[in-house]
Image 1 (cartoon, rainbow, N blue to C red):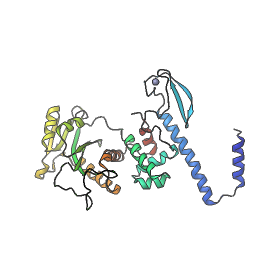
Image 2 (cartoon, protein in one colour; image 1 turned 90 degrees about the vertical axis):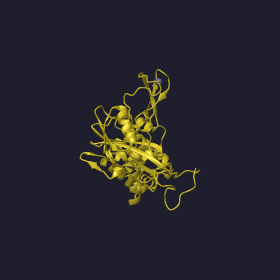
Image 3 (spheres, rainbow, N blue to C red; image 1 turned 180 degrees about the horizontal axis):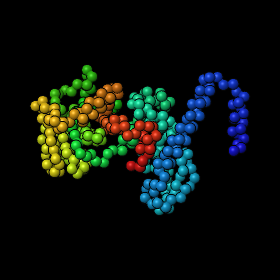
Image 4 (cartoon, rainbow, N blue to C red; image 1 turned 135 degrees about the vertical axis):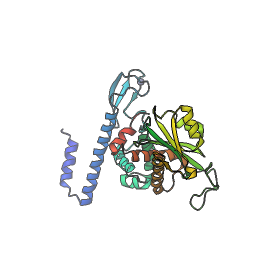
Length: 317
Ligand SMILES: [Zn+2]
């Protein structure tokens, strides 16, 4: 490929004595190009054969490239699109850094550390986290089967990062004003089967209600599944309503297990999740489900590479 500009550049580079630092800079720059190209190739591959994102028409024409991605024109609605249109990653920039950023997600880095590692601004790091993480965490098991443990855990509601607080600030590092579970607590409901598949639901503030339990778990228990819970009445009502076999431990009376009947796996999930959350120094309630989804992805070990996370995040909604 004879490109005179490129030939001149290469000749100029060959004449230039590079210091160690300069050579390192050059390598980093080239790696960015490689990663950008790899990222684009993965995105194109993931979207191969998809119909038009707007009208579903499968009759499409190729029409040039934009920002490194193939553009298509739909013969049904006449509009054009690319592999990222209709995905959570549409219109985000600096794709050469995305794979490196997904590695930071796998490494559970905080916003600031990820920004420094990848070489983007903190606000970009923050935006990417809250776009990339929930996008990858959309991959959820559609059903849980066999034995399913369900239980809620509660976290003190947090308005971290909010400009306008709707209550006076807490002092002495986050202690509730009232005792017990109440409107100051966010409820995270987790159901987990014994082969390790888990589903997480942020049901809002205060104790979980029967209708919420219905909405979250009503459709995800496989036929023949058996539900284990604590003795809360709503689980019994839920199981009776849906005709699900149900057994429970009387935790308030100090009973933690009766043979195989226990919820220690799901409670272990809660404990590990809360332990992992500590290094983020408090998470805003509105992002709680992003963090629990992030933890679910890490814990499940299904997506162990930046590539796998990217491909999951680049799916259409
Ligand atoms: Zn169309």
